[in-house]
Figure 1 (spheres, one colour):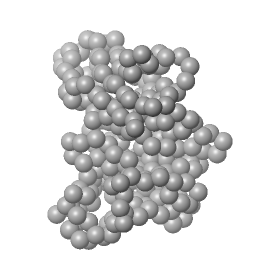
Figure 2 (cartoon, rainbow over the protein chains, first blue to last red; figure 1 turned 180 degrees about the horizontal axis):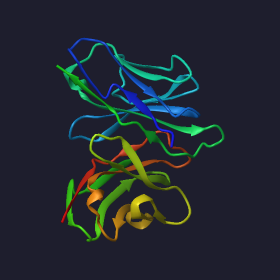
Figure 3 (cartoon, chains in turn red, green; figure 1 turned 90 degrees about the horizontal axis):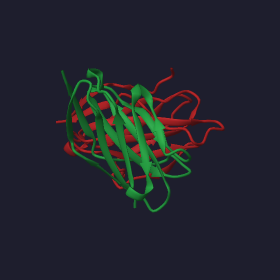
Length: 116
Length: 114
């Protein structure tokens, strides 16, 4: 069964550094998402992306965050200058092949980001 | 605004016992409701979903959930727990007619002991 893949599984970075989290969504999906889960807290929506633009973003998704689909397969989340509170598990998700609007989200296994 | 409340951050059952994980939601429009499971070091896997139609929905691994509009609940059940069911379970809600933004509950960690 096709799956969403995320790399790396664990990333350690120093405060103030830029970090890029990578995701390969399911190949025929059209809608892409990033969620995060701070340790011990809820899974939180960050951003949704469709047709090469952001369709919705949360309050968490400030100017330090950006997303990109640089080619036909990757979907990246960039944090420009990491803060300690950015430490979390980041989940990528995708859904919705052409003609199937009401399809559920498929999540990747996540990237654990640790900011020191 | 939508929200999800999961009662009980930790639930422990014996193998073979009934599993009941509680979820209540609030939504100003008819909701889509979901249960996801997260095994250690893995992503979120869809267990089941309610969109429209039959209020009792069956999912994978023998789980089912019933949408009760009058109680704004979507509790997850399984008649007989298995050791492999030990995981974290998340209830989530989204606006009907779309799956764009899921609002998750805080999660319930299910432990199954022999």
